[in-house]
Image (cartoon, rainbow, N blue to C red; front, side):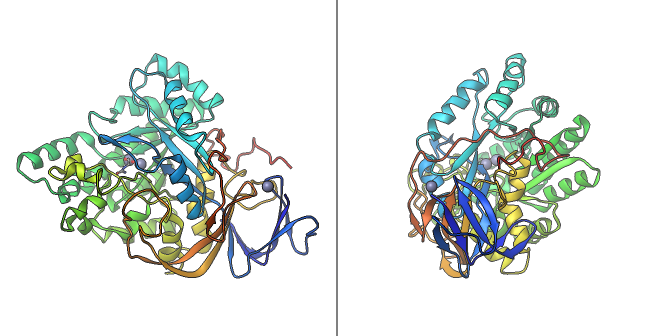
Amino acid sequence: MKKLIKNGTIVTASDTYTAEILIEDGRISQIGTNLSAQGAEIIDANGCLVIPGGIDPHTHLDMPFGGTVTKDDFETGTKAAAFGGTTTVIDFCLTTKGEPLKNAIQTWHAKSKEKAVIDYGFHLMIAEINENVLIELPYVINEEGITSFKVFMAYKNVFQADDDTLFRTLVSAKEHGALVMVHAENGDVIDYLTKKAIADGNKDPIYHALTRPPELEGEATGRAATLTGLANSQLYVVHVSCADAVEKIAEARSKGFNVWGETCPQYLVLDQSYLERPNFEGAKYVWSPPLREKWNQEVLWNALKSGQLQTLGSDQCSFDFKGQKDLGKDDFTKIPNGGPIIEDRLSILFSEGVKKGRISLNQFVDLTSTRAAKLFGLYPKKGTIAVGADADIVIFDPQVERVISAETHHMAVDYNAFEGMKVTGEPVSVLSRGDFVVRDKQFVGKPGSGQYLKRAKYNVNAPVNQNETLPI
Ligand code: URP
Ligand code: ZN
Ligand code: ZN
Ligand code: ZN
């Protein structure tokens, strides 16, 4: 049915203003003042911000990794995402060498179809480039609408691809109109340092960080950027954690290369010292790349502010502390990497970023939604509040204070990496294509209501996708 959102302050990546929003058939049909409310349900957004639903470009739901499977699947993960103000996730579809890409994509459809409560798309991992893969790429892009590929430069003997694969992926992506994403760490050197640490008897969680120094993230980021320039292609560096990597991205951008960077909440507010917490608690803070020395946080904040980094992903990849993280109790290399963040991405950026004056309100919207929509072929259907766009809308209370805790979060895991952190600002209600998923902080959505998104091709010269006119 029709809905009319009144009395709120609309915030987009470019504007902040007061107006009403009329929603019909899942889309925004009018924006203005004194709109006719006839036949419409009135939603009072008084005192709240009305923002485009968040787009989380980096999630791992129901993913096998580190000898186990992530705790949150497409149901619990997207539900928690919705509570946090995210209405679209783009998840990484894993592939295996020698297996048709089509099979991997079908596996990911099977994981998500009946479960997602918000809309979702997939990035595709590229493990190798050969004749079979090249034959399948047009299908992947044109039929599945998967227009971003992921290459891992780390996790040797698991996901890691070599430079030949990375370069060929960059060349193919350029040819077909896709964006190449990299996990940028030098996996070969990490492998050496890790084996050495274990041989020396250094098995505690802190050695996870010490065997993956920032130089190795900087080196891999620089290498990927150089290859991108050579291929005249396009690159998106996921989960940037440190100054070394920011420098390489900034340098590439100053040369005019199409290089983009994402960071994640954990790198903005947590640091390497967390890995030294006693009683194996440090395992809760094992990410790759690892948390860094605290001074890096300011570099990341400044990069968000200045535009050298353009998006905030969650890198949601959750494992229980008991029963999953503790697989590495006697050996840090066996701790599953990753953490639960999908729910608190917007709150943390708003509270630490906007409220503390580090970024503007419009930058907040750009970083959590609009830019990802543009880079990943979803704009202007997603990522903004405009006539014709999907009514993916968050009514966000900028004043409310709360404490992040596993006691109250909606993710399926038994801990929260931000436990005890005070944040200001929280979604009150969340709409996906005009329907409430969260209403007055209560879940009212339905598993399976999320739609699979076929995304448009990457086009840096027309990130406001000129081929896709709004359907109104
Ligand atoms: O530690 C992390 N980041 N786990 C998820 C997998 C990845 O590398 O993104
Ligand atoms: Zn409806
Ligand atoms: Zn990664
Ligand atoms: Zn990840």
